[in-house]
Image (cartoon, rainbow, N blue to C red; front, side, top):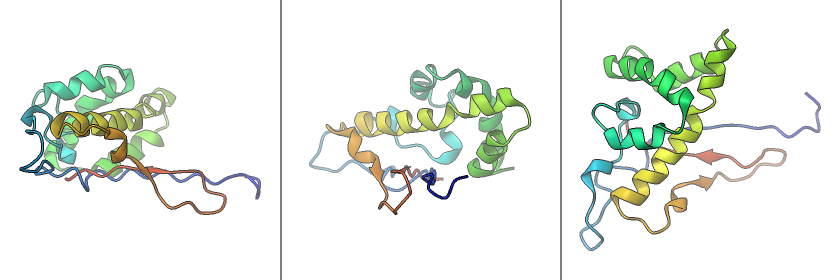
Length: 145
């Protein structure tokens, strides 16, 4: 890597701000079908069929979700461990499927933000971290485990 090449850091932190009580008494009523997910629920389409609406556009997520749902429900590995395994897998097909997981997570969090609390500007749920010289803008998400 060239010393002048920009460094890229990617962080996916699932949780903060997307708590189960994200709506407020004076705001619009919360839609319980879009309750912010725990990490173990991100790929549980049987329990959250509305999340399937988001995942249906991502073939890689549809391929990997059965394994992710099983591992997360059993607690045998963390989401980070499983995603790292997929990202560095020796099989290129698995790595290609993995590449669709971050956009799915982004779209799921945006959908949850818009639908659960009827937020009129779901883009506010995604924000760049403070920029460092030579580091491209980063997006961070957080969702409870």
